[in-house]
Length: 229
Image (cartoon, rainbow, N blue to C red; front, side, top):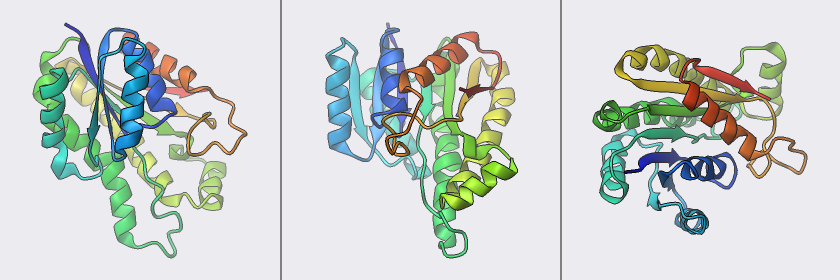
């Protein structure tokens, strides 16, 4: 029986490359996002490759709905083996003017939603061999003066704060869940990725390279963080 990966925050870049990479390794793939047409197209592309896939329209930024998401995935594809968290928010770009609720929403998406999904899927993960939580992080999470200045210049202050919190979450969960047989790891992407929302035509990193880094991290199951390129 194949394993199942749940890809949260599905889009045409990193997350679709993840779906293809894990699908090629005999994983069933649940694509999760808020746009039904995008999810349906992703499922169609995966099925053309012989991958068993399902679309689940769901807002992962609402932690209270995590149990419903897990129930839908179980019903359609079976127990959850791997969670890939690729969701993020551009909210609260300028902290001088953004409503505090926007900042909280970004943290709910980056941290609260992920923790809620882990808790809802905990029984599955603890019963599955090689279970894992894989997190897409970005270079804005790094505590560096140049990076911080870039976050201000790009009006991405809320995103930088949310990703920094997520970076710490990945490290804490890695140590917390390792004794339970659940691997937690993140790939910190320090370059613009082709085909993503940040690509204005100058991106240099292929989504498939990020997916390959995740696969290597997942198979090695040792270090919590890998930075690329």
